[in-house]
Length: 110
Length: 113
Image (cartoon, rainbow over the protein chains, first blue to last red):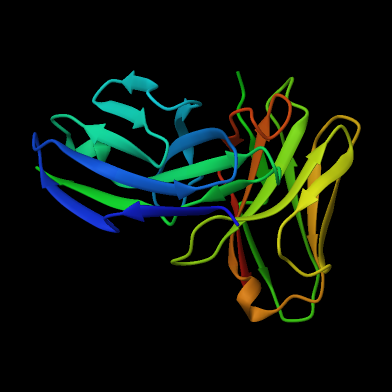
């Protein structure tokens, strides 16, 4: 069965302090890895899709990378508005569903 | 472009009742997915509909069911509600199939008393 583990569960950073969030996955055949941002009480907002090891995507202060076993979401010089829960999910060739991790709750302190 | 919409935003029911949740996908999207997000838990896959057919379901009992209409909108029905069904129910849509990026709606908060 597909598994997605995100770490850390929670992360507090000072404004401007760069860091990385980790998503480790186990799937039999990776179709795609997805990153979402979720604010409290709202639906997840799409950030990135990565399809193959070595791929990288960037958007403003965020950069996502992918290896054969994990993905990283790098946050450079974060601002308080980057505070949210970041979710990672994988799609499998075999069982036609997205499997989500439990997320990393990121807090940026002004 | 309008995003995924869901109604109602909040729903309060009592144990044993039935709940109906609705979802309208992004225009042009044919696949609709339903997820349950209970407090403190991750998103759990419920159902996937594509072209009016149920394509896959998660590990939920049969009292969770739904359908997709010809206009690709969808309904999720939960029968014989239990207290543990209280959660945020999220609908997502994609262009075609599980490998495409899923875009989420704002969710319906269901509270079972």
